[in-house]
Image 1 (tube, helix red, strand yellow):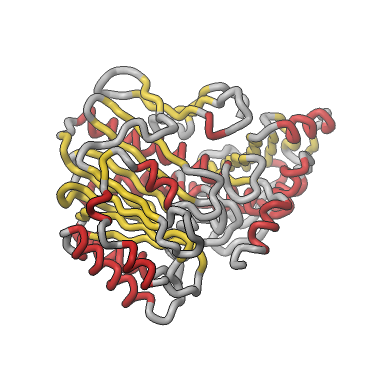
Image 2: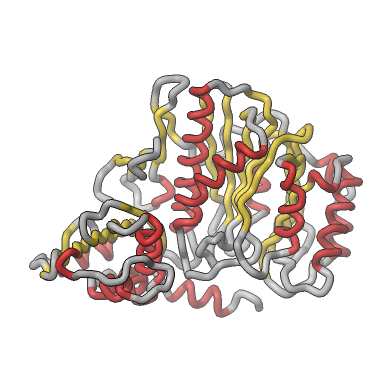
Length: 435
């Protein structure tokens, strides 16, 4: 990751420029706009928000008093919407309800409860539908236009008395330009909000994310919400979103644990007509913003001190490349080596060699393997490379962005995965999460 600006994927209109600061959140993602003929940077803030969207967030006391934990975002009128949900076999009741709502490609309200996942609870389905009914009455919208999300502790029933008490007056609290409040209200163990926005002429896209642990999508403990004014229908929104999710949010991992609740959703007021150039800009914006938020989630995850970017190139298939890259980044031995600044490339060999029934690659010929760390080749075609390991160790210890690259054969297919190191703080956070 030494190049100051580079293409993130060969076939995407997205560039990454590494900042001089130690914080990967300062890195700049950009794309070349076809409608205005210049590069557009993804802003690391919600400075751009579409008109026709109002928001409020309150402290309902879901788990703690005095903490924002219940937010509602309402479009002035029903718009198009789409989502990609967790593939967990134990999905939350909010996910199940959201799938029903978005089957017709439209919605008007997003409702998020944080600090409680509402999963494996005795009457979670009924509670979800009751909450939607209460919101429907308060906000004057159809319950079938409300997309709910819940995130937090599994197995604890929603405090319905507190939720019921929080809803009256919610409609009067809704204000335009207040998505920053929602970005704070959706957090659990996150260090802080993760947000971004783009404006290209009159086209606006903004987004917020939460996610700190229990992250390896298909998807993970991750909530991501996009809001736009692009006139795109539900199926087209889903196509753009799913394509972005696969290469970004489904290519990051913190701890290899897939959550029950996770959602990446997009809502549009459909106020701005798109010609071909603006449609290309819209897709590029969603992709670039997904790169930004995915990297921010990993860099700011529970206990993380280093962002790991692993790229694997193989000849068999892109799927094989992605599986192998995740094996590297998910390895506790690799993660702890990165945390300690140990350039132990043998752990990378171990990781790529782990058997996996999903792989079509049957064997690895060591004479066709090249491994690099921080841009330095450490192993090439059956031979370790004589380098200054002490200097590489110092570089690893000093860096907050660590690159690991593996090529097997000619490397016709590539996949990039983002992860993080494994620190003592991660263990502390998750050893005490429920209590």
